[in-house]
Amino acid sequence: MNKALVSFRIRNFLSFSTDGKGNPVEFSMIAGKVKTKHNHVITTKKMDLLKVSVVFGANASGKSNFVKALNFFKHTVISGEIPIGTTTKYCRQDKKNENTPSYFEMEVCFDDTYYTYGFEVLLSQRQLVSEWFVEERPSGKDIILFERDITKGTYTLSPDYQPKASVYLEDIKSDPSSLFLKVMNQNKPLFYKENPSYQIFHDMYLWIASSLDINYPDRPINQQDFFKSEDIKKVCALLETFATGISNYQICEIPTEKVMALFPKDMQEFLGKTLEKEFVDVKSSQHKGENDTNTIFVRGDRDFYLFSFEENRNEIVCKTIQFCHGGKTSWYDFGEESDGTIRLFDLLKILLTKQDNKVFIVDELDRCLHPNLTYRYIQEYIQSTMKKRNIQLIVTSHESRLMDFNLLRRDEMWITDRRPDGTTDLYSLEEYNIRNDLKVDKAYLEGRYGGVPLFTTLFPLDG
Image (cartoon, rainbow, N blue to C red; front, side):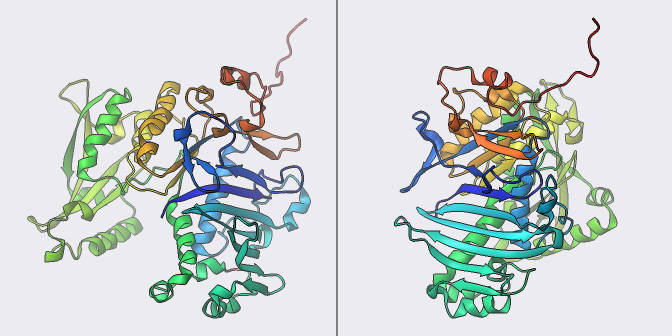
């Protein structure tokens, strides 16, 4: 099944208030009227969807808040309840927003069928207000799969999902702390096998939980899904092509006890239990020959370790990687590499992914990276990765060089701008009638499209 993000809508969260007309602020991956770079889109029966988008904007304009809104949406769905510590995350630029529901809605495409799922929440009280799941139809007569008004304790459920789903919905119709989508995916290992017509509830939940891959610049990216032995060569080859100076690598073993001692006690206990669980069956005959499937990747701020069970030694082995520079014979630990190399190492997860239907979201892509390297990274994604996989990439960046029509389409460039009242405006350059031969990065820095800092004078000039 091919799956893709269509749009995401936010209202009353952090710096996002409304679009100025009372409606939620909308970010869209729907392709515009651009006639070039047709390989940048996913074609469906209804419309074309973009494979990449870059969000630009000044500091404190709302770029990171956009990523945080996506993260809030994802984690609320996964847990089924409002995350702790979010009671003041409403848009505080207006006092009345404290008692106004915050709105989150995502539209996705599953094999040419479009679905919209969303919820409203009163953040100041950590209470859900409403929840809905809709299947869009070409005729315009959308089908409400379910809809809840939690405040009133009422709901609507499609006849196709009665009576079994109504049993679960009835139990939580007035519960302001539980999402129905989570309830339909909790402790039901056999439900969807026995009731395949309900599969869309499972598909939507799993897509949000596993396909929205959200990454922040100050958190190492989890790489265990690609870190197999055959991929180490690809990683190091890419590092070399990105002009990091790395010319060779080696995998070296470290005493497991020494590595475990580096972690806090609770982490040691967790890792010990995880290792035991992962490797307890490795000795059995059914796992013989599957060495690569039994590797646990542990990533720290400036180091990483690979734990694996070696059957011939009957023990857990810990390994790490070292790099060589410029053909020399000296080896350097991963943590000794530059911040830029470590950042790039993390980002290679996206370029080397073997998974389809993923949406990679990266806040501050250009953090620690040279402008040319940032450009090259997006170029590599466009020329290689997105041609092989059905994936989408959404990044925020200060790097104006990415505003290049030789690299991106006009509808792939978004801007966050701070309004006079301090709230965030989010819009696409598709709204502007821009010539294809225009130096759009220069025009952007001149302030023609907003989203750039406006400075005041701290020390007035004499005379």
